[in-house]
Image 1 (cartoon, helix red, strand yellow):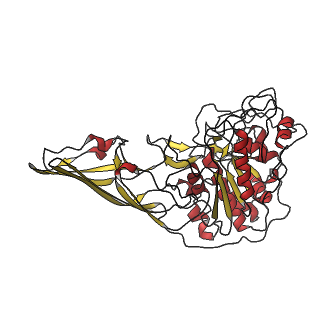
Image 2 (cartoon, rainbow, N blue to C red):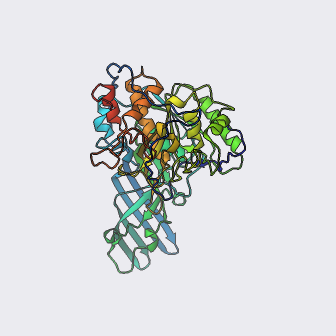
Image 3 (cartoon, rainbow, N blue to C red):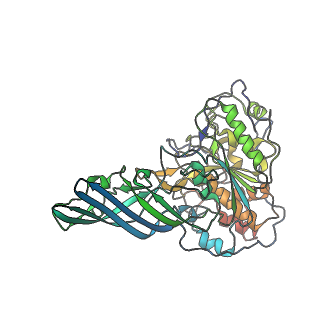
Length: 497
């Protein structure tokens, strides 16, 4: 799926569709254009015949996913003084679990209670994630805030011994993350987060030990006075201020069970694509094309990446002609989930011209080219409560017929306790839902599954019980991902409008 330059087509440098920023509500509700030149998106159709009973592969569901323990032990010998800081806690949540709960795959449902217990877990389905599994996320290094850890600090010198006891919250950064990272790199990458949301359950406990300079664990100030209080046995010892700064590295050992993806029984196939800044767009497209070529048996393929098409006057016909100079032809029978991007506007920002300004080129390529158009889902992001489109998310625009929404939160925060969000993390939620359906109904094709997810999307965006629109919308596409509605339709319990 290489793209070649053509007059009028301008791409920004290759970007991740992650960590959404920007403003603008993009709330236009104009009627959807019926015809776009000689090219068109695939309009989803209802199944002519519903499948037979779903396959159920029940497996045990551990109750301690994402939970574990921390042990902290620091010795600092300075001159005649010995200072020891210790702490331990069990039952701490050390990996995000928000993607397993409402509204991740639909309002009012929890995966463990509403799907997994029935054996609907994606068992036997391969999910391929094409992403960056090599570059550490440094600008917004991901972590999760722990609950309170009980700490003690002892000082011993020639004057005697003093002791302080206090409670502390930490920002835990789960590294090394070797279990979904096929390169064995001891960092948390964008691809690790995406893959962890989509699929897989290694059912393993991880023990990670970091020295103080590794910054796996960082003392965190929650501005809660109860967590910052100290009780001293001697007035000669005070709680050191650096214990409450973001930059205080803490030596620690963490043991925890990995959190599963939405399709916990599915297998993961990770394919790395370098996503660093470059001026060589053709080389980066070649990397994506090569990764797609290596995907042979996957039933779901997630691409939380893209290149933004900047302001241009290229028509839809001209854009598709450019794409088709080298079409991607060896496509597996896979559902393609593609992040819409985080540019805050519609795919087609021009009020007068139908151009691809503001679109993610990966989404355009997959949604319009013949081998993939019937099975492509372009995914925008909802806010974390699932009741409004996120300000940063690209709107549906010209891609409305293949567009739906899912929450864009990753479950991680950065060092300032700011949530790490983006359409990158909405797309794998849809990928996980697609994998569950493919495991339940192996006789259905990728296009069948994609169509079902689009046609059963929930049009009640704000959750007040009344749909915001009918049909297809230039902002919301088909609506919000709703896995339970999709299953009820396939089981014959839901009639489409």
